[in-house]
Image 1 (spheres, rainbow, N blue to C red):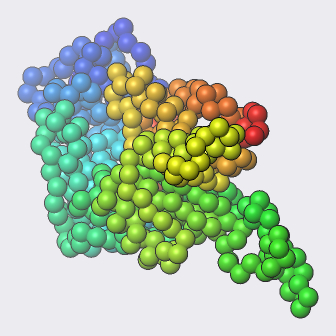
Image 2: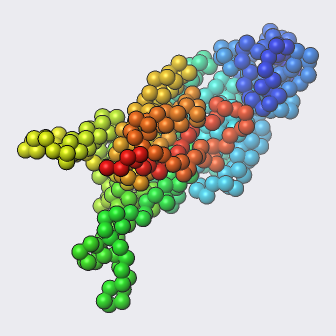
Length: 453
């Protein structure tokens, strides 16, 4: 039987023609049949009957049709998924050096409602929509055919399934799936908990952004009075202000603070690129325990300290301690009392918080949150150092994110020079015009004071 036809209203924006893969309930005039089963394919046509695309239909969702093809197709069978997955595979082979990566990125890979991450020989899938859930057997068989994994694990434990009329699901779908899997990213080894970890277990979207911190990690020794000089025996070696040779191999490295560290991915990259000392902070003791194992796995334990604390509170405490130190330096303060807080500063401060705005109504509060966290972070960056900051909130549009940072810089009395502006990595491609996939903002700023102390 031919697909039912979903006719769009005349008074609508031409989003489908422009490549957007969603059709909202308010855009549909009606179906030409009443026997359409939710999750089934329908052909989307204009009010004049012109074919536009084919998608799966779910009347329980406000996104009633999700486009899966711009040519008529009769079914989403194994052959359909094999063809799509082969395209996904070729894209990653071309653009991603690591084996471990996001293999399928929903709408951006023309597979709306499906996420697939590869961790070593195990695939972790999220099936987010009724249309995909209805075809789970075909897509699992196709994943096995194209990627030949040892196991496939489902992490469909996300609230968005409820909007589709589905229950949350987790568990083994195929083969052998160990809970802890070791992966490689940019030459670093780390463990991923595919069962208890956040979302699918790891955030691949920041891969290239983590590598982007490399230029920030060296070139700091001179600030400490250390320079390369020719010694009496003819060797060129680092020497301190007292003329003594410095034997610490990372004498030229940056001091780094990573907040919202999760399992320490930025910490690992900082160490790999030559950081002298890294403070790795997260509110979750479980996450920090994983970060510790990852640091040990890569041989960086002597350069990393771990802190379990709320990032906002920790930053404010350091700022308070810094202000106390400044007051003492000015005099008129009882110096017999011990400083309440350390008041530490760093050459590089990295802020990679979770999403502050998960709905449009939360944007104003989220903007205040981004301003606050960046304000505190900016105050703790050494003069001429760098702020590395990110937002993964889709509703926090780039201009709003930059506006929040600009306001923070103004209040902190800092001048910022943008040296890097990035989005998600190449295994998270974006379809032009589909703003919903443009969620990640990542920036590196050089930080200087308007008035130097």
